[in-house]
Image (cartoon, rainbow, N blue to C red; front, side, top):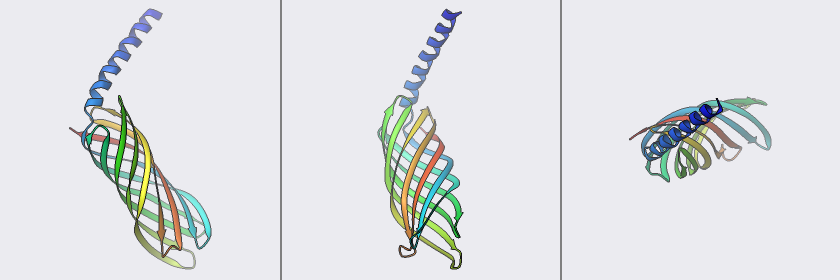
Amino acid sequence: MNMKFAATTLLGLVSLVALAQNAAAADNGFYLGGGATSTNFHATVDGIKGSDDGTGFKVIAGIRPLDWIAVEANYLDMGNVEKNGLKIDSTALTVSGLLIANISIVDLYARVGAAKWDAKFSVSGIGNVSDDGWEPTYGAGVGLHFGSFGVRAEYEMFTAKALNDQVKTDLGTVSVSFLYTFL
């Protein structure tokens, strides 16, 4: 029984290595994807601090011309949060360069780019206002790819300063996404 298990395990590992070599060679090109996000908002309004979490989604479009580099655009709906009389509903469009370390079917990557954010604020006693702006963004992630299909988890953050710096919000977004690469 142990010999059969060992032979089956060895055959399975050999198959995974063979698939991994094919998968690693077939992940460059144009890709699209989407996923779920969880964003932590740390907001400061005129010296009053608060934090809360929002959930949303992410849409991804990118191109990976070489194994070690990609350029990517993301649309993030970061959800909305409400705490202590402050409500924030926000989205962002990011454009980033990714520096990638490819290890068989695993990608480790860092990203740096710019985020065009848009937020609607509702403050008790003040009313509704909206603002937008451009901020630098950065992050890191890990992905697995199997030929044209991939899955990844990442963390990305930026700081939005709104309403003449009266509202400062540090946003940290964790996402899990699925990708498809068109070869």
